[in-house]
Length: 119
Image 1 (cartoon, rainbow, N blue to C red):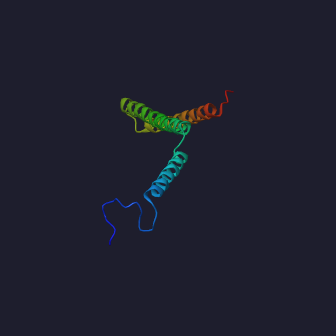
Image 2: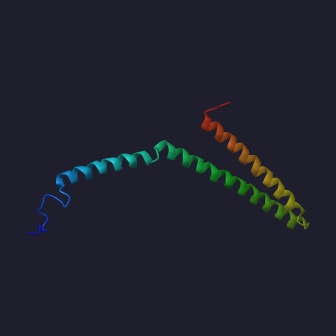
Image 3: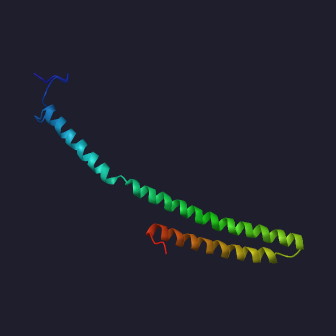
């Protein structure tokens, strides 16, 4: 007689019982949970990453704002005094320097904050 396909049979083709299969599946589930816990970033790591990302966006925004504002001032002076782009070039250079200087200062401040150095 052929084995029934109704699911009432307690042994598989290789002779293992459904109970041993359940035990192996439970063990595999626990092992997967342990691996998943090891690969999840810790909460303090994600906080530090998001803080650093915030600082990076802030540095970029400060540089762009310094250059744009100085460019607008230079353009306004050029149009008011009817000069060629002399003031625009001068103020763009000043704005670029100010943006870089501000970014360096902010980066130093960030480094001191993360290293715990308050000097």
